[in-house]
Length: 138
Image: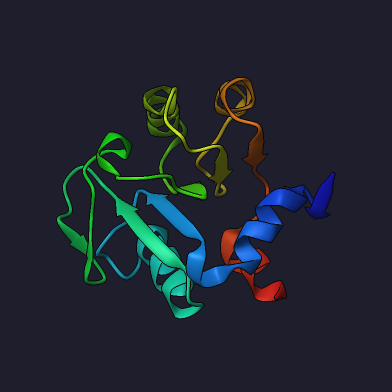
């Protein structure tokens, strides 16, 4: 069942709960020109709980940045990818066995291999949709 376009209704429900929805951003950045920063700022501005993930950054937009998905405490409601497909595939493999169950791939972060592996590992997979656009609908 879909909620908006190809976004599953369960993912839409999580997004509707803004303040309690924890979104990990894989590829978060301090560079304001990169989508890894634009997405973090956009989601923060809409009231979401954002968890930046980047192997080098220590903080992004004043938030603690985790070097790896393996370092993030607790469950993320959505893991949003803003990295090249090869990096996304590596993070997906790290996520196997973690409590996260919804992954979202921004344009440029996926290819057929990434989407195939994501579907094997997770019940909720979103691609071909921008999280910044979708979160404008409510």
